[in-house]
Amino acid sequence: MFPGIAGIAGIAFAVPAAISSFALPLLASHIPYNITILINIFLSVLSLLICTLGSGLAGPLIGAGIGGVTSSLGQYLYLAVAASFDQRVVITFSIGTSKPRQMWE
Image 1 (cartoon, rainbow, N blue to C red):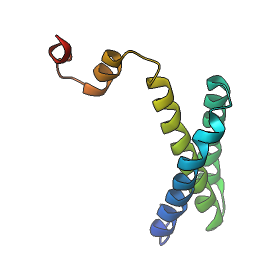
Image 2 (image 1 turned 90 degrees about the horizontal axis):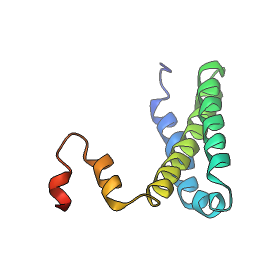
Image 3 (image 1 turned 180 degrees about the horizontal axis):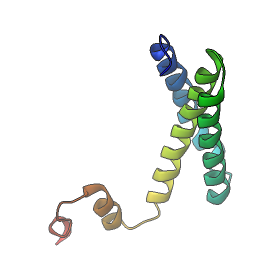
Image 4 (image 1 turned 30 degrees about the horizontal axis):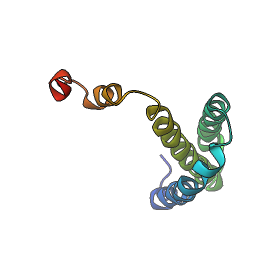
């Protein structure tokens, strides 16, 4: 899609994702889930728009960086919401197509 910058785009995605993986749980725990989900949706749309509409090398790299932050925030949100469910519900969602009843009966 963007010839010659695949490795740079991977670094531009991974570095903000790693930094925000450590920083976001400290910050996002003070913000309600509804607001955090809206922020995540906004950042993901912004990432897509900047990646596709950005010009030259800077557009895809900035979009990939925002995408890394969005990915980290999404993982934090999933884990935070999963902690509020019963253990059997989380196991059932994680198993997929196998028979979850056999695990706790």
